[in-house]
Length: 375
Length: 133
Image 1 (tube, chains in turn purple, blue):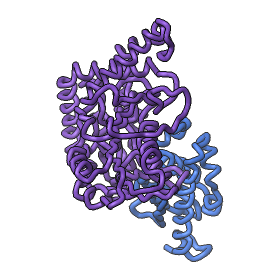
Image 2: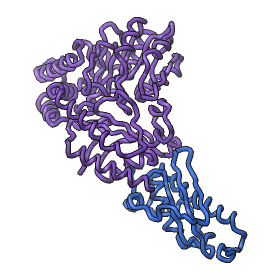
Image 3: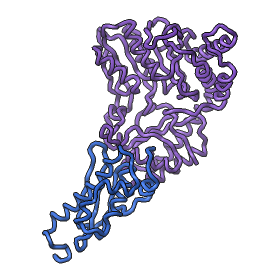
Image 4: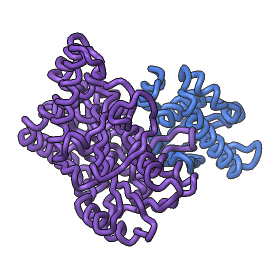
């Protein structure tokens, strides 16, 4: 049996989405910027998608900008905001547990004279709102805090941080790549929000950025002036349509799927409870994520052993000589013991997983853990 | 998963010479601080040959497989020859390893050499443990 449990890396495209996208490829292939009827058809689908996505996030369609995915959205949000409003420097607050798409941008702007504070999470992977408030300086202009952490699945206190940011006049960006399509998001809590289609059963290569109408951004890509000049490049109509269809399907099935994954997650947690000496990393986690370390087994070793039995999970720390090793910067920031950081595997569930797959996984996981503890 | 040969996967799934030797003549533990891998080698020496060898590993798939292959290669060899075994030989015997995993095969060889040295340091030159008893 093959079981896919790495949905935080990417998801399969829903069949219905694939069919819809195929139709756009072959029938509604006009350029959405052309004025003829082929173009007009494509434009209609594109704007319809924008409306569905905006509605899903409780914002207005004019505030949704299509991009190529999460990384591009994060780059436009941070660099576009600073470029347009604070080209001469300022202080930015972010966290140590962000995705590289934010961390590397932060590092880039830091090298160019901006001050950056990287908030440390608790040992449970949570960014404390108090820490956020304490980090604010007179010249703080922007904050970027992810909605859900990709490795641990910890849901961050965006609502509290949003209140603080608003009171202190700071623009707040959130990388919501792991949140959109899994938890109900009110994007209007923040000023800027990034999302990626392939994390919610839409194709790869499409995403969007929500930009609150009060916020001015400069482009980082120049060209034909698409997306009101913020993101030039021919409109990805199939991608936009695919994202809208995927979100509609998720909305339709949400309460059932939510319950299903919660019960699968509990089944896994119960299934490993008889194995001693393991650590579940992070609390207040989303229903799709389990990040767990087993003492005496490297995460990479366990992931490889599971792969040989048909199960795909991921590991954030790997023994490779590129940098001596690649350790999870998230688990490291949480200050966890070496065995926990080295031993972690990330299991991420998806809506298409079945009871049978979960039963098989629990059985195989327990067998492999016991086997490797004897090595 | 990294691209491993079938032989590597076989040694990973079914490691040879796994475990402890309770009355070992020598043993050594070596770790790689960089990647967190760790392993222990146990030796039983007879007539200056490796009569038995076992290992334990807290390592990645490549570490387990190279350790397993190393024990197969050196079992029965005179200790002077065993000392000369290089990580390259082990990797070749496994049909290759991804380059970023070469250091794992180093760990297997380093631990073996450390165990042999521990044996030599504890035994007067030219005298085998049998002749002592």
